[in-house]
Image (cartoon, rainbow, N blue to C red; front, top):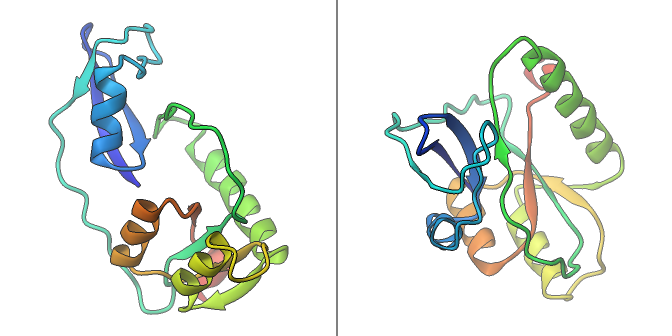
Length: 158
């Protein structure tokens, strides 16, 4: 997954997630990206600073995999960050992460391997979570294996 900052023809800026840079290019060419502020489909990438993720030793990134089920391709939806509801949104995402962890099998650093087995129906379909490197996540996305990053939980830091 990749996050781009976008800008419409009227100057409205917003962020949106895409499966890949190529996915953005296809959607932009087909005018399938709409500005959430004005609805304009004339959208382009805005100039932005590169994001460098820091990783702590005590809290590796957690990833949740979906069981291998075909789903129709849907256009990416813009996601806005900031504002007074950010803390509330983070609490909701953490609640979802706790629920995913409670209802999924923890596979640790074998996440990419297990997700592939489920995707290619070499293992029973089930929800899993664990850790994956940036390279592993990129490879999974390129193979069409469904997964979603989970936000860190306060208890992960203890």
